[in-house]
Image (cartoon, rainbow, N blue to C red; front, side, top):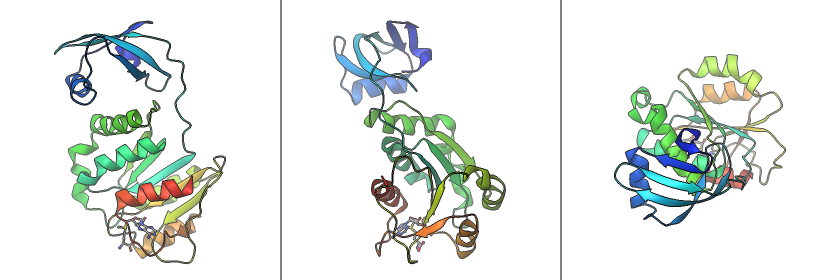
Length: 234
Ligand code: SAM
């Protein structure tokens, strides 16, 4: 639910057809059901569905006093994946607790990916919400899109890296990706595109303070690498 859905402190109503369909098709919800609901960027609690038709769903809300799980102390920098992979990747990232994501252009990202309708804010938010709902989380990640690698690394990253340990996942190299980091460690993690980072980009990232780390000899698809890296790091 969003604050916009609230009718008063005890009732909420949703109108949009996508969420109504989701209630019916995915949750098989019917009037009288008790559901778990979360307020965007707020608490979680129980609600009774009192009305459901083609136009609205109306809920009577109990206290939304359960807190969502803790976020990961991580800024993820991800070379923009191909549109087909983006949706599932965003869902996974949100479910795993990433709250800050930069989608970045790199040499091996196809320029056409930036034209994808999947990058519209409402499409991105819809994928993130699916992941949050799965993980009983309510805090929407902050996403930024950066279409030029070099100005981002040279002009923006230095300030963003203050107080952070920075890792770039890149096959090969000597250092294995660390495991089980302390949740007090602020981390920035860079993950490359399907074709990997080019040498120049690795050199720039290393110069900016990133340690190059690998996950062993198996080269993973981006969507798998994201999950493997996050599960290993925390
Ligand atoms: N041929 C590319 C290369 O050698 O870099 C493979 C790229 S991989 C499909 C996509 C991204 O996932 C990589 O840029 C990296 O960030 C991450 N990745 C996948 N497997 C990895 C591994 N074994 N070690 C470190 N990073 C990995």
